Amino acid sequence: MADNKFPFVALVGCGQWGKNIARNLAQLGALRVICDADAVRGGAMAKDLGAEFSTDIGSVLLRGDITAVAVATPAVTHAQIVGKALDAGKHVFVEKPIALSVFDANAVATKARAKKLTLMTGHLLQYHPVFMHLLALVREGKLGKVQYVYSNRLNQGRVRTEENALWSLAPHDISMILALAGGKPKRVTAMGQASVQPGIPDIATANFEFVSGIKAHLFCSWLNPYKEHRLAVVGDKAMAVFEDSAAKWEDELVLYPHRVEWNGTIPEFVKAAGEVVTVAKGEPLRDEMEHFLSCVDGKAVCRTGPEEAVPVLEVLAAAQRAMDTSTPIEL
Image (cartoon, rainbow, N blue to C red; front, top):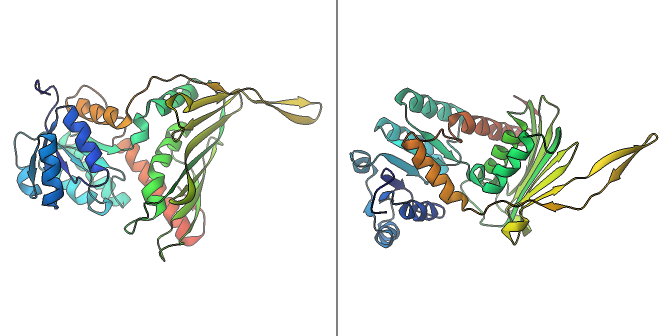
């Protein structure tokens, strides 16, 4: 945008997801530089979006016109690149996960706090208008006391070689579950199945128990015969389903005022018709990028900063340990 209403950002990594970040930053008028090891791919993208291109991240970080950096490189590089960007005095957006170890996540979080810089993790669904509305319903008590949450994130590949299904798919679900439950679980169990590549589970399930009594379950797989992105919240007054894979936006959030009534000593489930909840349509990634830029400008408080992202990583790491050892992990 000609009026430069947002600070300038350098995007590091323009691959599978980075290209979407690039597009949205460009539409917001904030994309100044794309930095990528692939000069052909990155150069072409930069030209199309009216940005500069570089293969040298060091020179990009030295530029005074770059206020912030968006990192969309492989997860194994996140902690190192984020640390360098923070050392250079840049605000940082990093795709999930914030790092691959809790130690590294805490290190970059401490550095960001010390330098008073924004460090935001790309837990995209925290910026999805439908999930935000569902979270508001829960916090307002519209579902009553939450008892159970489950999330399915299933699809037919892309099969990864550098990370398993838990690390690739579950961060979004853990982020939503922790928001709905109001904190970390006290106990985690998990199991996985490596069907394509030895040692890299492409199917994973995890169960969480919270001090409040809430229990939650997630199931993620890139070897499923159909696509399903569904989050269900069961309360003692009503139930709600957020289906991100619904064919129409209007069907993504449905409230079910089901209830249980007692007939003497026998509980009976009383079904009620589902009520479609109207939520204004939005583009989550666009809203996420705009929120990041507003945080950089000091106009907003980051919703997925280290205080949100590090606990998600702690739970993810606990689920991995539970899966590796076939034993429950206490947090």
